[in-house]
Length: 142
Image 1 (cartoon, rainbow, N blue to C red):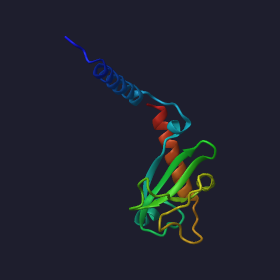
Image 2 (image 1 turned 30 degrees about the vertical axis):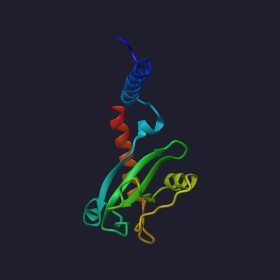
Image 3 (image 1 turned 120 degrees about the vertical axis):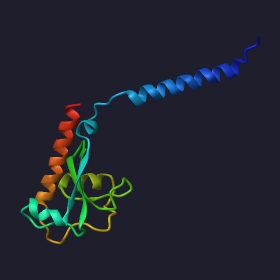
Image 4 (image 1 turned 180 degrees about the horizontal axis):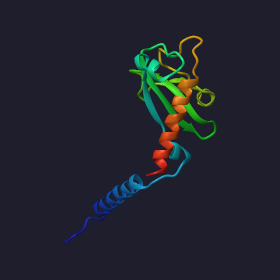
């Protein structure tokens, strides 16, 4: 029986590649970003008045306040209008960390709606920071 050495090597290399991908896919990380994670909460003009003291600050009736973590700037809070929440959009930054992170990345918000002129963002920012805290707690308790 004759063994074709090049086919045998290709088969062994293929098995090794699949095994290494499986190992990498199952490994855990403990990066700063992984520990903080990111999350969001849906907000709407209709329900805002019942839960908050300040007027609804956004120019669209519904959207998401999200929070993520930037290693250099800390917790970032953004607003993404409904329909603009996937990864191809850059939300409107609500706090200094979010503004600084976008500047560092040379990014600008590309959503067509955002914040009402003169709006008080204090409660919206607190909502976002709470989302970060909840996400961090969830990841810590895994």
